[in-house]
Length: 358
Image 1 (tube, rainbow, N blue to C red):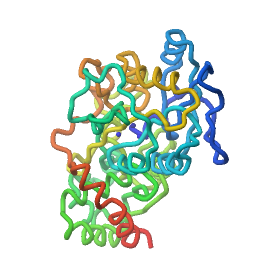
Image 2 (cartoon, helix red, strand yellow):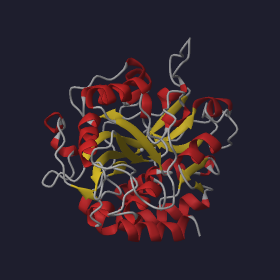
Image 3 (spheres, rainbow, N blue to C red):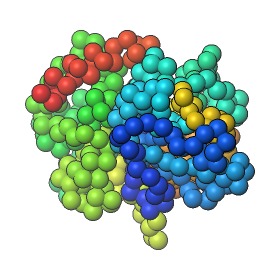
């Protein structure tokens, strides 16, 4: 789910400023008795300072955050550091990428407290508990309402719409090889058009001027016209983001509008669930387990929506009014069976790269 996802949270002022992910040697810094627990994650991880203080007060552990780019890049780094991790817990691998670290033995099994409050359909590794579900949401095309109103043009609603001449050169998406939402958007096309049709779809999309950039931050904040964080410097009124991104454009407004300035093309969505796991070789596995428990706690789960603009996985977690009023509910998002993603993902990415990038 990144958030969102992954995500619109990057535009908030509530993001906790912590350490950047080093690209050199591994090692979480500190042993089993250390009072610091290190969370390795993507750039868009965010949590309220008060919530992390509560974790420290409850457990005695301080959280150190190491960020590693978009979700895809962060997962790749975790795989490369398998057995000699840069931290204790990894957060930010979603269902589109999950098999990669699981197959490489990146995580150590741990059954986190609170799983009984999480629907079984979101527990991707129920037998072994190598990962813990934390949040869920949908990757969708977002549109800039004002831009389309000024042009007297109806915004797109479906994947098919995006290939029509009137939307030529308007869409920016993320690289499926390095970005979680970028990959989810490709998977949406596979789910919609099937093995034979998705490639033709991307040929049409490229002919219609789709732009591909490295990650969500660049797509949303640099290229999208509707990003408040980007101060309108972009020139693309369509962007691959999240169904829960619109609330960020209203967050903090003293006089909030009747509707968010950005909308969601509901026929373009793909469901994501994000997971966390205890890293194999973690120097502070005790602290890591405590952190995994905390990520599933009601306190953290109810902080998620307005920090990373994703939905909590706990069924008893309450959503804030801003999130429910301005976010979009997607009744029937596209999905693909995890085993199908596992079997075909690398081939799909390679094919997509030849179609959309090269």
